[in-house]
Length: 169
Image 1: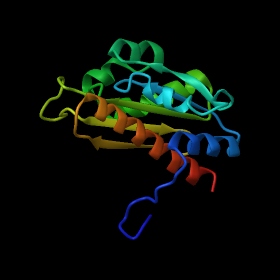
Image 2 (image 1 turned 90 degrees about the vertical axis):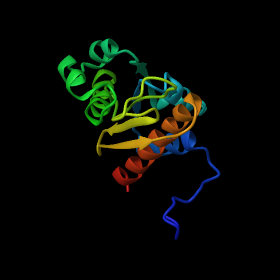
Image 3 (image 1 turned 60 degrees about the vertical axis):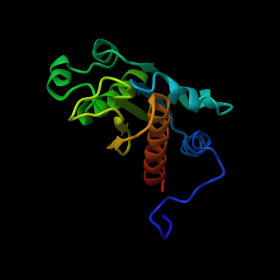
Image 4 (image 1 turned 120 degrees about the vertical axis):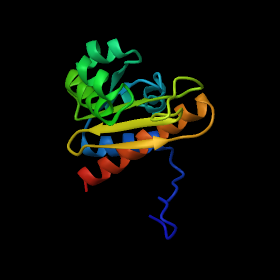
């Protein structure tokens, strides 16, 4: 952290940083995406040689896909909503289980411009990491659909980087 409370900026792109950390640890990752629609996987595959550490993922956009592909209980989705901490955490755990990877990442949110509610306005995004260390974060992004999705991908990669650093310190 810097004196202003912000994390220091690196000239190395975040996807490269997390892939380097995975490579150093000899670990693998898989992703479960909803609102980002594959953008997270796309970012990870910008790194040459990513296939040695990135298993792949699932774009579980519809609730039914979350249930069928990731094993998320229909009652949980009904009770908490598809955009919730519980669903994000289960997305990350579900893809990790399906893929057999060391880490799983999950992201679900309301990218807009419609679909928001007073409780979960457009820009609400839950992200999750499941692995040797696990955690979730709630974000409220502003801007258009593309910006919300882009910021969500950056947030997931940032959370994942912190977990990798903590787990492999």
